[in-house]
Length: 474
Image (tube, rainbow, N blue to C red):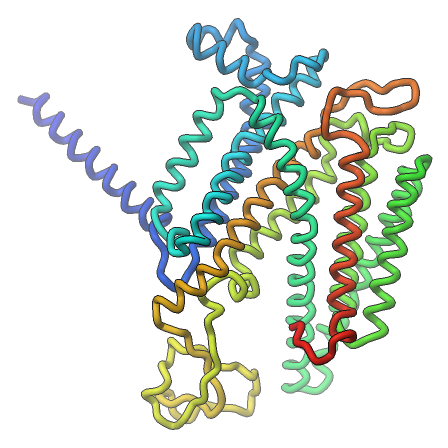
């Protein structure tokens, strides 16, 4: 009798726990409202992929290699051997334990990032056909993704992870460098407008009180330019001795000077934006020269993980994720919230929904509300409430979100593995001789070209309004 009561109580507690977990999961990851795109849940999945990649790289891969094939056989003669062989496949060309460890760790990174890349590619194609799919069944999406990641532990490194995806990730990361420049320009413009706007608001309240924000803007500009030119000086000192390195560093210096002079010569852009782009260009130059396979002009060649490059790459990836998931400018570009249209306001309160319709805030202390139920004269922003209009907007925009996240997957994979590099031996001419398809002048050239494209793209934003004054480039 007692055992029956205990079993019934256990079943009841189990049911309550499962029901609560299901409710929490559905509340956190369930379908979103029709006015959103589900982009934050997409970003959350990519953050999960980054966490799993770090865990596989620094925890699981070393544990598998340290235990060895014999000790893994304790788990099971089939499963243990399969797991060990899967994580060491494709690493036969390396002889030292360090190189094999790097190879297995890199493959560990490629597992979650490859699956997240495939997920977002499928999501991009699906959302272009059925846009509301990006808002639904997120618990199932997360469950399927985690299940595939678990199964990938037993899958062989080659050909998909260390072969096919490695080359795809190199191309995707190169493309993302250019897109990342657009994100950085957008962030820099918003930063500049925010601080200048605060200065104007303070001056309206008390003349001269906005000088603090203007000085802060100038100080930030100076800081970024100091970092940029200091970085160029350090690269000339530590990465000299090769014509390719000198060419990349010199082109970076000339590009910084050119965009700065071009920006100062007109009214387009801002000095803060130019300084941020200059610092970003120096970072790309450093990433390029640090991939040089010649040890005579690359002192970091033998470092298995370039900590500075990896840290900066993760910071930029985090900024890109934050922009994609939470920036209001990204929201205007990629969601139905951009379906805002100005409409006039009369004295009829029925045409205005206080607390629902956003007002055009002119930030003027002289304007006051005399009646809380009536809006002030001016403009308010009204949303299109028709679901068909919202879905139509999604059909042309939301796929871009998933495409950007797919490219971020490639960028994260290349950042954590330093573009798949594995330290090896050096021949008599000082050239890196590891059997590694991603360490060499090809990666160096790809990053350098991406930097030049990024600088040319920013130059176009400065030149285009002057060449075509009758067009709107806002």
